[in-house]
Image (cartoon, rainbow, N blue to C red; front, side, top):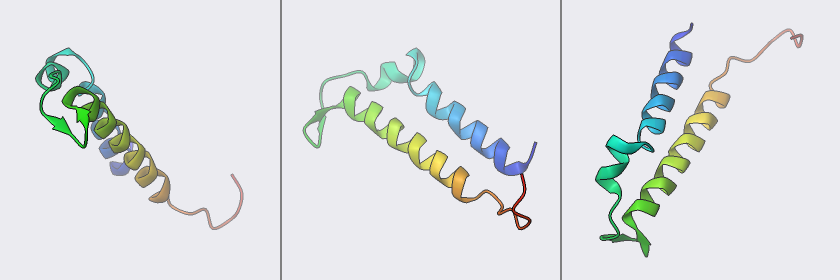
Length: 70
């Protein structure tokens, strides 16, 4: 497993852990409001955007194939 893939898997697991009970319980309150959204909803939006940018980084950092064959 390459180093890039290990970083990707570790960060993805951290993001997913943020959506389950032990971590999500910290952010499950209604107050404070963040950009007009309750904290629990803003936390989910933050994790969703984090996973999107993580996938984007993983895709863009993929080494290019110079031969054109797969």
